[in-house]
Image (cartoon, rainbow, N blue to C red; front, side):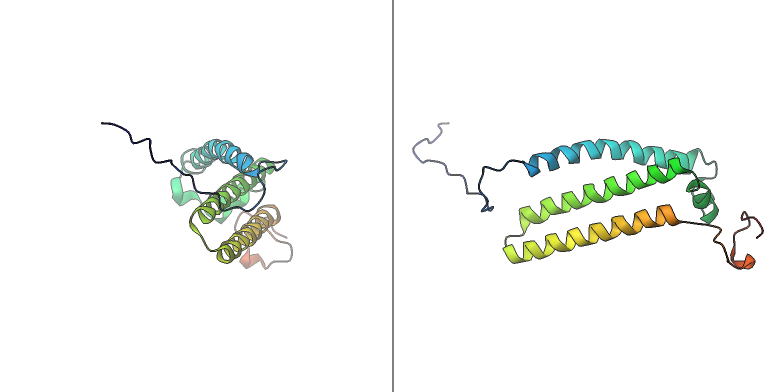
Length: 154
């Protein structure tokens, strides 16, 4: 079978109108981040599942308000869950950004979708982090009937 070399092959021009000479290659760093965060997320997720479902010795039925309250009273688990939250949201958002850039041809729609993705990601990261660090299972001034059984009497 012979290959036809008479017709020149062409490569489509990239959609980006930016000049090719930029000082920082953000796509390369995004690619590297996706690989690094993916490996780290696998470790974080499996350790999270192991500690919550197997080492907790009660399975999923043992995960309740008291379990989360006890876990988040330890700064180690706060940092662990914050790292898990941030890496997962940024990793997922970067993947969605790549999909939007690859498949949305309309420039205006692409910009709207990327801004919506950025805003939703920032809001979720801020709210999730706020919940992790301000969570108090025994808030001061709460009625004793509203508090879980493990809270000390006030």
